[in-house]
Every structure is written in C-alpha cells, then in structure tokens.
Amino acid sequence: MTTAFEQFAIGFDHRDRERLHALWDTVLDSERWSEGPLTTDFEAAWSAYHGADAVAMSSWSGAALAALEFAGVRGGKVIVPSNTFMATPLAVQAAGAQPVFADCRREDLCLGVDEIARLIEAHRPRAVVVVHIGGHIAFEIEQIAALCRHEGVFLLEDCAHAHGAAFHGRRAGTWGDAGAYSLYATKTISTGEGGVLVTENPELAAFARGFRNYGKPDHAQAGLNFRISEFTAALGLVQIERLDEIVAYKNRIAAEELDPQYVNSRLELPAEMVSGRYKYIVFDPHVRSTGRVYEQPCHRILSTGDVLPNTDWVAANHSCPPLYYRDGR
Image 1 (cartoon, rainbow, N blue to C red):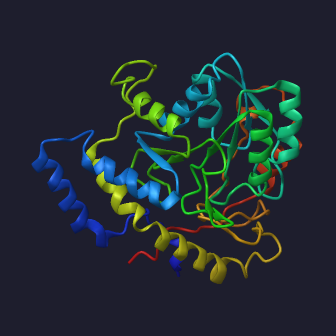
Image 2: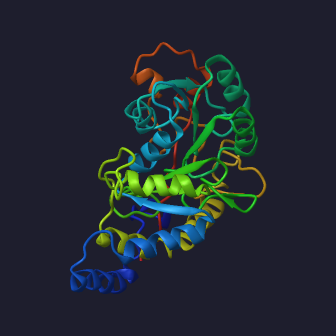
C-alpha cells in the first residue's frame, strides 16, 4: 500500500488553479508579458519572506552569475564544494574564475569553516560558494559568514535546495553577500524554470536587475537575458504563499513517518534549525530510496585529482528515502 509520503506530487497545490488562471488572464488583458507588475509583486513577496531584497531571474544560473560578476571573480579563484550539482562550478567557470574544490563535512554534507579558512589562506580566492544541501542550512554558516567578512571574501549561498529553511529565525541566503535560489520543476516550490537572487546590498540588487536585462538602461555593465515572464511571476507569487504550508507538511511527515524508521542513521539537525526538507537524508546507502542528493562529486566528474575524503565518503554512504510535497489530495 502506498503511503502519503511515497506518492510523488510536484509542489503545486491544485486548489490554486483558479487564482493562477485569473492572474494569467490579467497578463493577457494587459498585453504586457514581461517586465510588468506581477514580476514586481513576486519580488516583493519573496523579499518580505526572506527579509532581503529579491531579484527574479529566469534561472538559478542567472542569479549566481550576477552575484559572481558583481564580486569581480573574473581571473581569480572561487572556493566551491565538490559535493554539489555541477551547476555550481560551471557557474564559476562561466563567470571567468577557477573553481577550487573543498571537502565537505560528514555531519551536514556542507562546507565547514575550518576547510574554508585553510583554502582562503592557500588560494586567496575572491569568493566562496556555500551550498545548503538537501533543504537544511550549512551548520557552520554563521562562522563561515564571519570568516568571509573578516577576510574580505565575497560569500554566495547556493540556496537551490533551501526553500523555507531557517536557522535562529534567519532565512537561507541572508548570511552572505547574496543567495541564489532555484525554481526548477522539482524544487519545493517551482515555476518550472526560474530563480531568485536575494541580497541586503542595494548596489548588488541594482547590478542584478541590470545584469538580467542586457545591462539596461545605461549598459554600464555586462549582462544577458535572465528575465522572467509575467506568467512565470504569477506562478511564483502563488507558490511562495504555499511555502510554509508545504514545508510544515514535509517536516510533519519526516517526524512522524521517517524519523522512527531511521533513528540511528538520519541526519540530525541543530537546535533552532528548520529544514525545507527538499531531501530526507540518512547515512545508509542501502535503504529503499529516491537516490542520493548527488551521485558523483564534481571533482570526480571533472577529474581534477583533488583528494576529498569526506566528500567521497558522503557520496558512497548516504541515501534519500521518499519525502514528497503533499498528500496527493
């Protein structure tokens, strides 16, 4: 018998169809399909939720590239985890920088402050990218942010998994100089394709708005097309209003159904951390699962020759039991 958390359902609540279609009708009636009021409304909703300025993008890549270009990484080095999706190092390369792979911690699958400090001393990078894995925030994000501020190194948080996550009441993407979210089809909330940059730096926000639109209006900066359409913005506006509900549902199922099964092998969260539960992670490679967060580390894919024992251990020793978005109603 299939239980609630085993039946796949994308993170869209079909009770929102009527409202979504009404918003789409306003777009059709306006004859303005891009750069319109729904994009502004979506950014305002995202900003209010995260407590930082928000710039809607057509992809996570657009948000990450805007941040990295603003940071001036071109010609320099950027520290990135190997335990991440290839989008992370590829964005660094596209921004004209060299990725320096860092080892992750076994406790949270994320970067830690000691590894970053070692690599900052060795490489003097222009930026660090911390990836929040599986829905939770990197356990040492506060120390990492303090280190990067002290060293004058730009900190980008990769929040592609971290929708709805919080630590000490603070949202992912707000410790560093910027955070980049993904709204790809499988994410906790989704617009099919899309992304959002968050930042508390008004100069970066203004740069990102120009970067997504060919540098308009004055073309004082480089940029390409990373705009979203008004139809996409309408979907994002509906989705973010469901985010807390979806995250609460996933955390309830995790606590009631999964925690008792994996009491000795599950990833343990720190006190005062709320995971968005994009994935439920256990340190057991043999359970029935939906696969791993990442099957192969980036340093293995790119054959860099880096020796990253924790990263290799994590790749071989974790799994993700099914935990989907709602009960299929």
